[in-house]
Image (tube, rainbow, N blue to C red; front, side, top):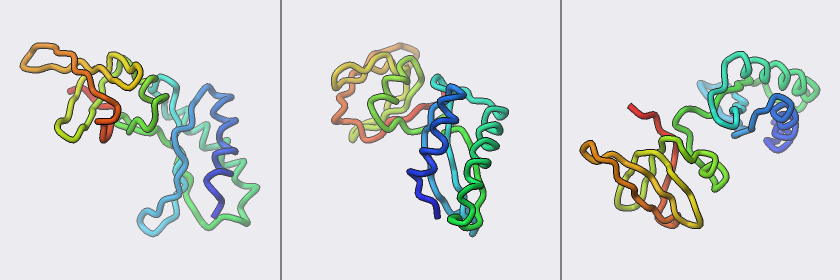
Length: 150
């Protein structure tokens, strides 16, 4: 099986050329099949299926050179999802202005991420029709992800 790092090195130039960001490369087993899942997105989200198809085609051509080193697999190029986890400071900063879900040991907050400065997030939440700003220390965050506002 081809190492994820090698695959990342193959897909990064494609992403750069198309103005995309690489979110994740994973080998997963689904229903008995090896799946190479490559998640890409536009910097501000909203990638379309035509772009995903193009990346799939371009990456598939590059992977053909490694056929001898690969088991039988399926290539899946997809978006990271509307409710993807924000894994680092850069992803959190890029999400300022977006709707997020933040879990702390004591509570779960859902609202608009207003800022991320120093070690503190400020999220505007709706409590019974009134908007309130909540400051959350980075050390208290168990998980933060984008959320879909319903």
